[in-house]
Length: 377
Ligand code: XIL
Image 1 (cartoon, rainbow, N blue to C red):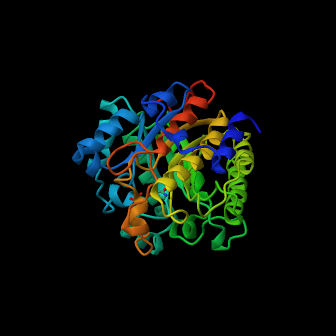
Image 2: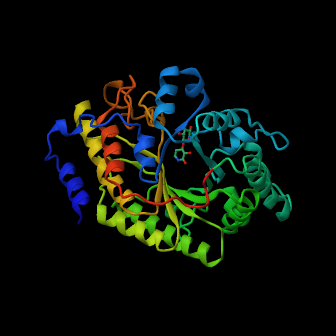
């Protein structure tokens, strides 16, 4: 265990005083990351970006990369078979360009958040080639439109679900699998590569970070899938690790996670942390303590993630607790005292939290790395 891993485990055990989390640097997170050859950024949406100046100021200051939280999903982009609506995503991409930020694209192929017409057509008696075209036309239209402007595409999102019962752990209970089986992944990647040869292409997954039996099953299935994709020559550049972490619920083990990252990068793949947030559900009722616990969890997680030189991107899923999907996501199980999720680096008043300090320190402690060729946009 190196010095940083040791430090992280010490912090997890709560052995350091609260003052360890006082902000040590105002340097923007994007700068701390870029100094090490890493990109830091956040997901965003037009409502907040163009309607909340305080929020937009933090984004402009801290983020070197943006990803659209929902306006790049197919239900938004293609409301009808013959109608695309790029207005919202265009405005985010243009904003990123104006501010010298890179873009991640999210997502070209996902079993969820598709327009109802697509599911209907996938279930219809259309011929197989026509159904394949429903996938490839979308991928080539969207990746082609933003060609040269998206550094990293989430080509396929969340393809693993051992709970679906398929022997190899693939997510099978959806229309795209029902029609195309695993070939849909190959087709999406090949089509994306042809449409935008400069973008780095990612498979993005969640539930693969923690030391739980369920995460272990997902990691196992995912490694098998990545091996098959490499063997078939599918043009995949990296694994996106969503990192929706739940520190009070799921045990995190640095060695387990480090081993997994090594297995992935030994295949020649790079790593992006794509949707990082820290759910403070459960645990202490004291918000300040929760903030410290989430920061300690971030230190433990990021120190391992950044120890691997193939980790080039770290994205938070939002930058302030003012806008976190977690607050509204589980309405049946609200945060204590009707509060909000405290999952992100800035609080609802846009003040930096211990979590921000932890992220900053992880970048400061990271070893520098050179840039990758593909995905420079
Ligand atoms: C979530 C968004 O945050 C929500 O605003 C939206 O309503 C649903 O999707 N994994 C993903 C993201 O890949 O696209 C999800 O984003 C969060 C989980």
